[in-house]
Length: 291
Image (cartoon, rainbow, N blue to C red; front, top):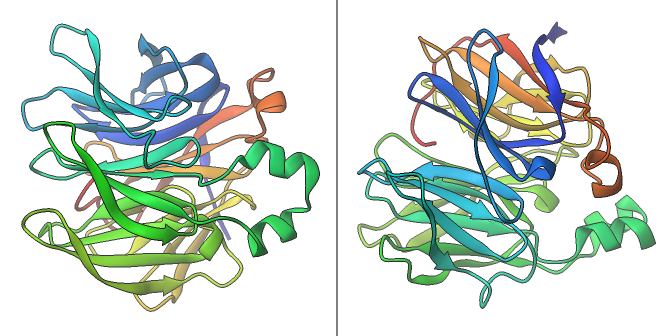
């Protein structure tokens, strides 16, 4: 099995990686910070947020969108660095918000846990949580900050990608063990919900799309990131040093796969220890679509 190479460590818990302007941007939950990393492994804090940040994206004019997990909002970073509220998702998100993908017009699709995962981990077996859990809404955020339900009854909607033609949204349903696709209408509404790939016993966390039309998937329950094509055939498995929670293709030619790993996602562990790493692998195809 192929293996990743360590790029850098010392993080609490990295999530939401995005290759943008020659650097890997990502959220470090328990530092309440958005950070960047160069291809050489140099990390810097770009800014801090009031609550834990997660999914990241950019509007067409260069302003940045940041998911604020605990207060269930999307923040907007103005060009002067000021953070303001872009959208309030609390009426539609039933627990912490997480990953996000932003389309070419600045419209965003945001997932949420659906229930208190930390409490569930303390009181129930993982197998029971996976088999029995509330569903959640995938939320659409318009460029003016208005919100609506894009798709109901999702099994922990997590990492998301949009195909290069802007017509298909694919969402990792962590607790559905599947990648689920939708057709995107010009107004941003979704239809034709279908299973793009069944993942068997593998849950999907962060995902990214490549130029061959395949998707890399971070596995939060195993030391791996894997590549799958539509229909569910796994074409490559890459071993990571610890569980993998997010991935992104980037680098100068788009073929560096960045895998964000940590010993645990549990707050009482991840907030106290800096086990988070960024690991890399030379991928067979370059990044495509969004993010």
